Amino acid sequence: MPQLAGRFQTLPEYPLATIPQKKRQLIAQGFDVIDLGAGDADLAPPPKALAALEKAAHTPAMSRYGFGLGLVAYREAISAWMQKRFGLRFDPLTEIVPLIGSKEGISHLALAYLEPGRVAIIPEPGYNAYQGGAMLASGEPYRYALRPHNNFLIDLDDIPDETLRRTGILYLNYPNNPTAAIAPRDYLESVIAKCREHDILLVYDNAYSELAFDGYVPPSIFEIDGARDVAIEFHSLSKTYNMTGWRCGWAVASPEISSVLTKVKSFTDTGQFMAVQAAGVAALESYDEFVPGNVATFKARRDAAVDAFRAAGFSCDVPKATMYLWIGLPEGLPSAAFADVLLDDEGVVVMPGSGFGAGGEGFFRISFITSPERIAEAAERAGRVLSLIGAWAT
Image (cartoon, helix red, strand yellow):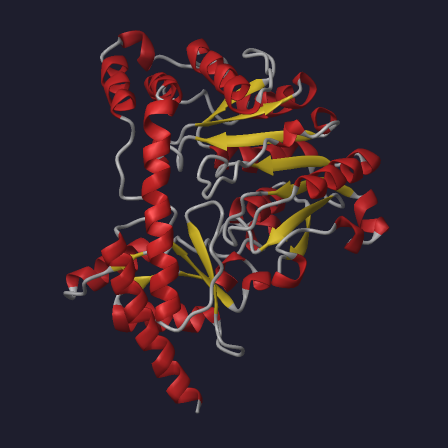
């Protein structure tokens, strides 16, 4: 067999890769499976996005290559939305990069900024695209454990100066997946100052900026002075508009930084299907009429999930944003073992904290992506497993 590259051999297994097949097997065996694993809600996209997709799909020009430019109207809609939502102006042609979902942009960007000996600071637990992109670019991952004692924030003062001097990328994601943590403004200001001091590119993953509750309004990193010198921010239609499978997102940055991602992408893809970009325009333009109701649905599910899992014997905070609960486990109970028993015995899919890296051990993540009734049923089943494992332990 041809020899694999070392960078490939170091890749861990992707945590969601085996779940679909396992679900199929359990369903075939007659299990009533409740999937709280992926952040993939069972809700419909905006009607106007569906109509725009149908219309554009019947337009022959939309089936041609989009290339990096893509649908100019999509760029313009993004620019208008960033202005409306954050009060920030980004030039549609030079400061916006359309993406085939934010995940591919985040992963591909590492190819331009990392190489052997260059460090990527990666939150752990964290979205696996961060370490995957860094490792495929032959970068050196520096994993920083997000734990309750540090409010699930990366404290750059904890990282040795020698490491910071070799750092090319810092990945941050607030509101955070999987912990649902949020970042105070003064924290973001300190991060920007540190990145400017060490010439570090801040990759700010803002995929959950619109799934926020109880009056909390997540910021753009570009609301922080100096961010345009060192940051690129990623957004996605996936969570806000229930369009996960459409793979439609974007990045914004100064021309000097956005052009780097554009160049990398020119060698890896020829652009998102322009009919999907046309649907993206319709989604963004329907923000006011669609998003508040969608967020209210997630809030009801959040409240149901918190109540149900607490009643089942678990400890969790009430998240101010995202579609996740980050739930603690008893000390000494491996998260993977708990998730395996919960799936095999009770047919409930959750994500073990260790699946997001060693820093996530001691927790598991649920996504409140189905009805309150199904979430309550899943929590009851999880409580049975918790009691069973507790009996074994004694």
